Image (cartoon, rainbow, N blue to C red; front, side, top):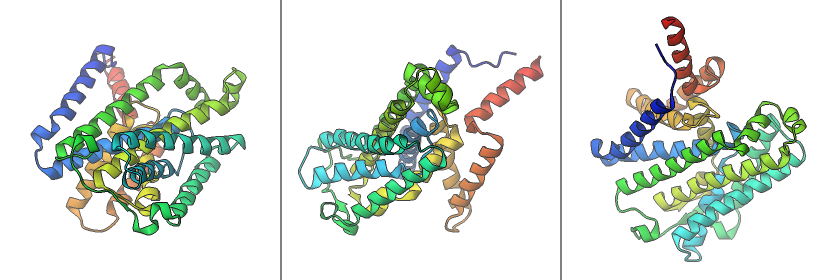
Amino acid sequence: MNTEVTPARRGILVLALIAAVMGYPFVFTSNYAIELGMLVLLGAFLGQAWNVAGGFAGQFSFGHAAFFGTGAYCSAILVSTYGVNPWLAFALAAVSGAVVGGIVGALSFRFGLRGSYFALITLAFAEILRVLADSVPITRGGLGILISADPGWKNLQFESSTGVYYFAAVLCAISLLIAYWLKTSRFGARLAAIRENEAAASALGVNVFWQKVHCLVLSGAMSAVGGAFYVQKYLFIDPYLAYNINRSVEMLLISMIGGAGTIFGPFVGALAIGLIGEGTRALSTAPGLSLVVYGLILILIIGFLPQGLIGLTSKLRRKGASNAS
């Protein structure tokens, strides 16, 4: 029995996924269900943003909220204070996340920070930005920034939940294309070499410092786009929402549970976390129960499935092949 995922099978799976995502709002028509689907797609996009650095390059971060919040505030300030077109603000938010990613990467990697030290320094940057956002006048401190509601595509605001859902689906598709590019490009191969062994990669001629900086620039830009999307969806941002550590943890969890360093891992992780969250809320009203379940699943993933749920499917295919032979 052939259990290998051939290109033809992979293509069929991708087409089935596209059909499922596109048809979801026609099957589950309630605003609640569509909102839940949108959150899964946004989570997959943000998880992929973390995956670019943490999965493909092995640069684990605890502070990706620094990039998310920067993009959110950049978009909100440009739109509400300076009257910039939301589409242009959306693009500039990506630039702001890339700049912050470049700064964090350059400072961290220049001093040789890696592993837990790099994770902690990203957390520190996120906290510094949260304090600044709570203090400087342009962000209106703890009051936050409120964007006027003016529904329409021209203002990047959505008249229906379906419009928001499909916009999130487009972002998710773009993130999957980026992941596919990283899997197949020379840049992605260099990142994989760095992830496995930095010293060996350097000995082979890879400029480890600049490759890691470029990786964090891309990851920061993607995270900032997620922040800009959040602002345009909810029309409000404050320091807690922008730079909350829970945001960083959620991005990490999605990628790790689904399968860090894989193309579809963040999508699978976002779907799993969404289903678990809804399941725990249906079974119990105890606050924080879903976080406890997430933690237990992460422990199991790290202990038994280091490649996440995507890795589980590979294990099952190999087991099926050995049983068939």
